[in-house]
Image (cartoon, rainbow, N blue to C red; front, top):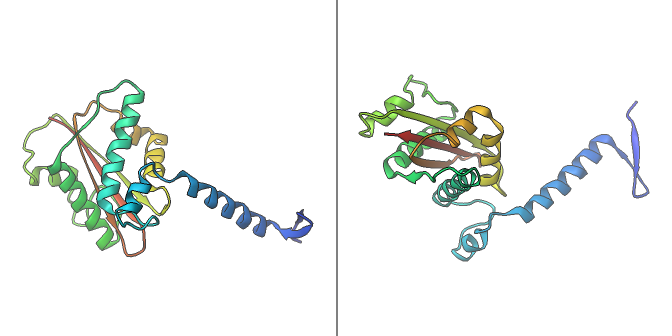
Length: 182
């Protein structure tokens, strides 16, 4: 027998309570839109779906904020790393896979070397598959900071970074951030 609970004088099933609570939570998240969302709206962008280029910029800024809060130097943007990241995100979105290694077996090292980085001390990559249309930047960075491996990359001894975002036909954001220390 399903348990019922009274809510504002109405008898509700647990599943209805869960849906109601989730709806309230989502409505509350709408208030947490990125600080520059008004700028996006005034530029003619849809508030529900941010452009990949705008998300790349915001993720870069958000990661540097996380580093600054811990007294770490900011990462410098590298357009070639961003291109490697963007191509990987677009590839994952188009072919519907999610991983650091492509179905053909190409890993981060091969992708970075193909773009002309012949020598470097270390390279790392964070990936995210994000379905949050309201605050994808905050959700992505939060999840990375909650994961010891992703956090280690984000706060690691790297000097350069590039972010690439692709929007899949499903509405999901495929996000890749590459970190490099020459």
